[in-house]
Image (tube, rainbow, N blue to C red; front, side, top):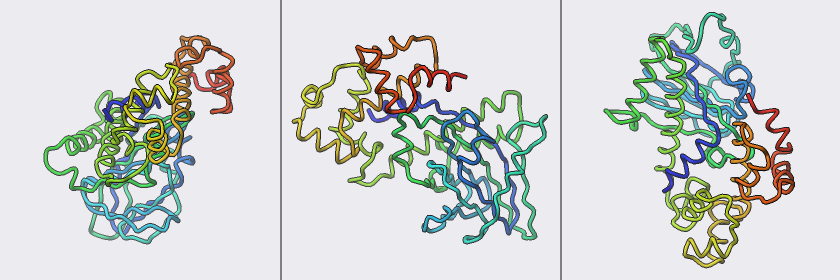
Length: 325
């Protein structure tokens, strides 16, 4: 059940991916990345939010969030490190080093296309190879996946050994990024999206008992069932009594479960999800605002427009004008 809801949200928040750099770094080396908001205009100018990831293909390194007070994470061949909130971070051959971000590497010749090969020269004998990419997605009106993920996700090399799905995915990304075959950019875009989904699934599977947040809530039989029902039929005139009855619990239990796991009331969640669906329909074009309002459960176009503007600060028409590409 929870995988279906995850797919539902992933399809609605317009996930897009790109592999941008194939990096060879000889020790000692340090690469510092500014916030993803700074990099977004350079790599994905049309994305609302950008996530950066790195896959270590050979050698070793360290990853550190800047000014977060967290311990550095050691990266081995096959490790994946991802920064869902777009935080500035440092990758280095030894922990504790800093370097000014080098945005000049994004200024590549016009006749070239990603992934770009970047080599950091050092005087040490140890070389680390990594693939660096970006994931773009919508954040507004509602992206429960990004909001529930931590600032840094490390998938250790143990998940990518052998002949499993994730290890094969990484090998395919490496092959495509270095051969530059026709259509490589499109293939790498889809592979990056798959990598993100797999990292999210690995994170879900690692959550301890008693964890809270949207991803953990999907595993709870009561909240997960309620969220599934809301996603299956978002335009239905859901009341607390109807939802509790269909889930098979009392109204009090449902209210408490939502508050404990998601931190919001069930109606707030439903409104947020309706507005995300509406935003996607507006961006896709082809439907009038009145039809979109009806599709997400509003009998009145005016009521829908008020709610949409409250959630996004834009009217439906202004949203469509700004986001249709």
